[in-house]
Length: 257
Image (tube, rainbow, N blue to C red; front, side, top):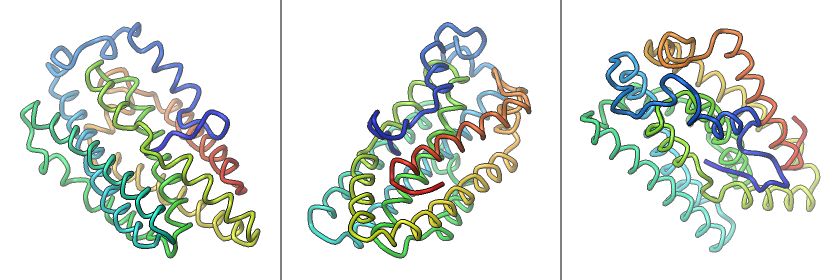
């Protein structure tokens, strides 16, 4: 999950960054520790779902990057992807350990999300090296934006963990440089990759909405029934911010949104 350089596309929306900076001063759950917030069983269930979804996402990202390394045109590129895969697995380990640390079975927490995430990756399997890079940059970043929007409303302990595992693993700069170089060498590549990125956007948003709709605890968190959640209007604004960030990433890649 990636963070582009400042002179390219911001990984976080401005609203999410502002919320992160002021979260400690916010009243309610965002100002509480995990021990305090988890006294609410609904909140605890929502966080377990969130951590389970994130953990399986990181595990799937590790597997995908390791597989995509086979498409790399050279040893240096293969090594770069291997390093990114290792970083994703480290993120998975931290989430797995947190779930175990709060007396949850990690596999049980991840299981509800396996089918949807596996289907997303099946539907968006890259056909070549460049499509794999665009997926790693665009697809993972959409998911990261969504989790960051939710994270700013969580207790301080969970928020810190979630934001840290969404840190850049090196995808951003690497993917942008490789894709822009490929387009410069053959401008026709740009049209194909732009269509691919639009498909990724649609699939990623559909998958996120599907997962939330199927998990009552997450739905309650998003619409304000648990923690300091969103109202329905804010949910719409959240997805608008995610779409805007996607457009900026497309521009960083040299692609039209």
